[in-house]
Image 1 (cartoon, helix red, strand yellow):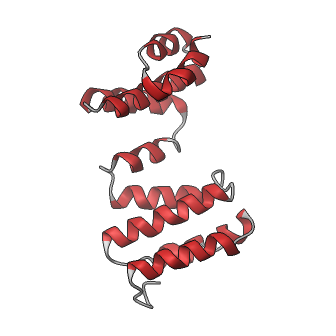
Image 2: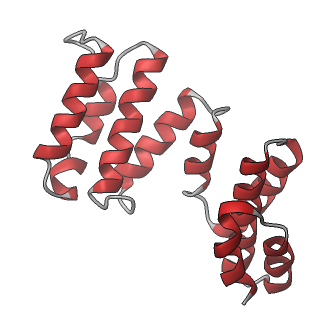
Length: 155
């Protein structure tokens, strides 16, 4: 794509076409290294292309592949301050490593929706590592759309 110097709209159209043509995860994973090598130079276009490919890999159930991880690491290296990218990058980490990151994120956010999402992820991470008291305590603080999921942790 970089060599062809396509406009961002053309790249988006090609990504939409790919989602219809690619039938399985195996069809997709072999192309990821070349895809990354051909990313456009423009940061916004590069991020958009990566997001499209990440979503396509999710759609094709490729989240457990090394290529999926490579895409996540690539987009994180482009813009580590982007909250959406941070969330997806943290998912690659083992649960014990997520806890201090979520705690740090809680200390710097003021947005209620984001606060609830992070608090839920913190509670879920505690639950996954067997820290049940901490999981319960964190889950009690969850409100809004994540409350239902938090109640499962508290049960």
